Amino acid sequence: MRIEKFQYIREFSQFENREVTIKGWVSNKRDSKGLVFIIMRDGSGFTQCVADAAKLSAEQFEAAKRLTLESSLTLTGTVVKDERQIGGYELQITSLDIIQVADEYPISKKEHGVEFLVDNRHLWLRSKKQWAMMRVRNRVIFAIHNFFQQNDFLQMDAPIFTGNACEGTSTLFETDFYGRPAYLSQSGQLYGEALAMAHGKIYTFGPTFRAEKSKTRRHLSEFWMIEPEMAFYDLDMNMDLIEQFLKAVVKDVTEFCKEELEILERNTAFLENAINLKFPRIHYDDAVAIIRGEKDVDGKNSILTLENDLKEINDKITALQNEITERENKIAGGTLKAGEINFNKNKIDTIKNEIKDLQEKADNIPQWLNSARNFEHGNDFGGSDETVLTRLFACPIMVYNWPTAVKAFYMKRDPNDPRYVKGVDVLAPEGYGEIVGGAEREDNYEMLLERIKHEELPVEAFDWYLDLRKYGTVPHAGFGLGLERMVLWISGATHIREAIPFPRFYGRLEP
RNA sequence: UCCUCAAUAGCUCAGCUGGUUAGAGCGACUGACUGUUAAUCAGUAGGUCCCUGGUUCAAGUCCAGGUUGGGGAGCCA
Image (cartoon, rainbow, N blue to C red; front, side, top):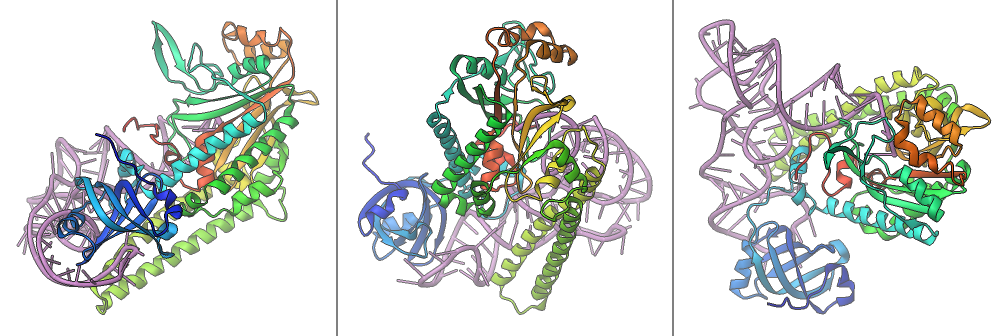
């Protein structure tokens, strides 16, 4: 059987006052005696469709009334402009053909807990916000390829099975490779360097695996990473490229995903800043001074800012608690209609959840303050230190020249000050933390060998990597962008598990 | 691995200091309502109160251990 020609909701503006046929699912439904309002989604968008008893056969109208959430159907009708509706149009149904009346759909319009939603991820992906988020993800990926392809980078792929735990730092997933232990790649970078020596400018774009038992809102066990590597680039050129690249991606998404960002209720001020402001480049030493509150940024002090945040959160909690009391009193007053009582009860539920979130933050801030005040020069930044620091800036910042001890063996020493390596971390604003980590690479054979030995890594595993420093070594640099962290920041959501279709994290292998 | 919070109906939660037959809203179902946008009305069904053990005349409630999950630390993108 052939499927007849049909149109997509996204194309409605081309079909004003004309008849179209769409195929999709019931995303929401309301009905009264002679009318059924069906919010349809077809993958390309959402639109309200109206079934009017006066315009349909009794049989078809009854069918419309019987529809359940997520039932699949074909609708034919006239596209009518209506500013009040999502997308600006609605469909007045002339004919309706049900493919399946769906079973009771588990995801209701009410709020759900995170665990329930992740358990139902295969269905959750249909919800409006998740739909918007995946479209943002798609556009981010597209913009990344666009940027690199237009700048003469070649996309090349690094292997996923690796024979050794290459950077020696994080815990990896072990698998069996024809009887030999093999590890799922934690980074394609070392291979990227070999590829850059063949092609000049390359980028890899692939999955990455970390076996750490992290339980935070910014970690995944399996995520996607973009790792460009450029021959004849030093740290400054690297930072220039990173900034240009991030600006290009953000600009593209804000331009082509307006509707999606609106659905996500994203405040785009910080995104606009990322496009328009120059990213501050901060030496590690200065960053430490700022975190400890010894140095201000535009008159803003990290410790005072954080203390103020805490106060504001507590004030907000008090205000919300007052609102709950108010609504409870209203309900107790006995003058409200049942519908209004429900509305207020729902509102109270929502507020309670909000308070819970705020309370969690408020509980953490004192620890963060403590960590910031006592931060020791020479340490790596923790998640909270990043938050403390980035809180003071309106756009992403780049922290460069890190203490040798806290960074990977392959980073190049700063010849002017060998206590530091020429690495750079890009920290996103609004508490999203590290989205890019990069560095100029150690290009001197002896220095690199010494670092490998110093870290007690198996030298023979790095034979091929050392070869790159024997046969025409050149200064080179690169960086890694965490796709999901980028998507998360751009879309303004709270948990990284929402930034990937089927998240894998500690304790989560299904669906 | 550590700190911290939690687990009660399909979902979101209430259940105060232990006390008869465990509640609400949403959702589902039945019916009423001619334009709705999570705010109409009436009714119906729906429970292994996470598990094991303990204290007690009596445990959803207290205690111990465990399981699962949220948030954070460490590690990082």
